[in-house]
Amino acid sequence: MTNYDPGLYYDELFGGRDYPAEHSALIRQRLAGLNFGDLLRRSQDAERELYNLGITFLVYSNKDAVDRILPFDIIPRVISAKEWAHLEAGITQRVTALNLFLHDIYHDQKILKDGVIPADLVLGNGCFRPQMVGLDVPFDTYIHIMGTDLVRDREGTFRVLEDNGRVPSGVSYVVENRHMMQRVFPDLMQDIGIRPVDNYGHKLLDAMMEIAPQDVADPQVVLLSPGSYNSAYFEHIFLAREMGVPLVEGRDLVVENDRVYMKTTNGLARVDSIYRRIDDAFLDPKAFNPDSMLGVPGILEAYRKGNVALANAIGTGVADDKAIYCYVPRMIKYYLDQEAIIPNVDTRICREADALRYTLDNLEKLVVKPVGEAGGYGITIGPRASKEELADCRAKLLADPSNYISQPVVDLSVCPTVTDDGIDPRHVDLRPFAITGKNTWVLPGGLTRVALKKGTLIVNSSQGGGSKDTWVLQDGGLQDGAQEGSAS
Image 1 (spheres, rainbow, N blue to C red):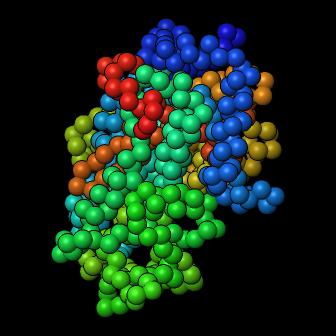
Image 2 (cartoon, rainbow, N blue to C red):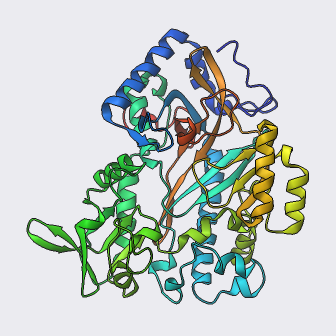
Image 3 (cartoon, rainbow, N blue to C red):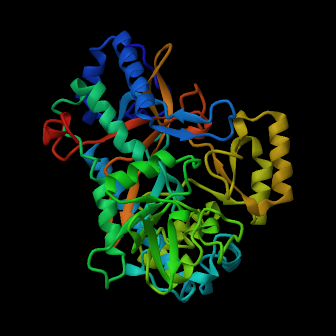
C-alpha cells in the first residue's frame, strides 16, 4: 500500500491529512506486510465462497444476470469506539424522534398544527395510511427495524443521507461479511477487539416477542416474505433462520375471526407477531391493493384489533420519504428539545419555489433525487451528467417539482479496496441497523457499501456496488477484548 493515495478525500483506514486514524494503525501495519498477490487470492477465495453459499441478490434491470452475488472487498472499514459511541447516540436519537413523529401524525398531529412540517406534505403523502389514525401500537413504536444511510464528508464529519424505515435490507450481508473475514483473513483479525454482530437475530426475535399481544405467553413469530422473486429473498431466508422462526408467504397465512393463522401439516396455528418484508400496498388486498397476490386478506383488521403485531408498522413510509427527511432535525428539536447529533446533508425541497429556483440555477453542481425512488435509480449527479442528462433532469423538475429534492455533491469518504490494478481508494457509505421494541439497540457496525467503479459516488448494489466488513473496535484500544479474532 506504499503507493496508495486517497487524494483529498477522508480515508476510513488512514483518517484525514491533519488527523490520522490512530485506532487502525495495527491493521494498516498488517496489511502493509502482505503482497498484492496474496490479497488478490484471498479476495477471489471470498468471492468464490459467496457464490457457493448462495449469498445473492436479484437485479431486475439486467435481464442477462438476474441473480448476482454481492461483491465483497476484504479490506475492512474500521470505526473507533469513540466514533461509534457518537453514531450510536445519533441513530438512537433519530429513531426516537421518528417514532414520536409517527405516533403524533396518527394521533393529535400537533407537529402539523404547529406548522413545523407542512400538513400537505404528510397528509397528502402516498405512504400516509388513514387506517392507522387513532390506532395505538405497543410502546408507541412504529419503526422496529431501521437502516440509516450515513456518509462521511471531506472534513471527516458523518452526515445522514437517508432514512430507511419501511423494509430496510442489507443486514444479512453485515453478518455474512464477518463470517467471511473470519474464514479468509483470520490473521488480520487476530488480537484486535472487534464488537460482535452475530447476535442480530436474537435481538430481532426479542423485539418481535416484546411487541406481540400481551395475552400470549409464548408468541409465535414468523417472517412474511413476498417470495423468491424479491431482490432480498436471501436475506429473508437468513433472518428467519437466525431468529429460528418460520419463513412464510401470504398464501401460507389466513385470517379467521380477526386472528392470523399459519397453515401447517397439523392444521392452523396461531401467529402473533409478523416481521413483514412486504410494502403496505401489497400487505392486505382487502384494505390496499385489491390485485395483490402477495399479502393476507383481512390482516389489517386483525392488526387494528390488536390480535397480531406487525414490524414495521403500517404507515411508516411517511417517515422515510426523502422530502420528510429534510425536516428530521426540526422533529428532533420539536419532540426532544435537542439538536441533531448527526446532521443531515444540506437538502432543498423542490416543491418550494426558492428551492426549485436554486436547483434549476445550479443544476450542474447538485445531486437531484426523486423522493420515491430507492436503489440509486433516477438520481442525477450534476457535475458528472451530460448536457442531455441535465436537460432531461430540468424537464422533469419543471414538470413535477414536488417529486424531487436536491443536495450538494458530498465528497464521500474512501476506503482502500482491492482492484485488478492494485489497492485503490473507492467511495463508501454506511448503513447501521437499529432494532426498537421497548428500547432501541444498534448493531455495532453496519453495512459498508463500496462503489467499485472508479470515480463513481453511487454505492448501491443494484448499481454495481459491493460491500465491506465493518469493524467497530471495543473500548480500550486494539488489544482489549480480542475474542473476535476467532469468533463473532
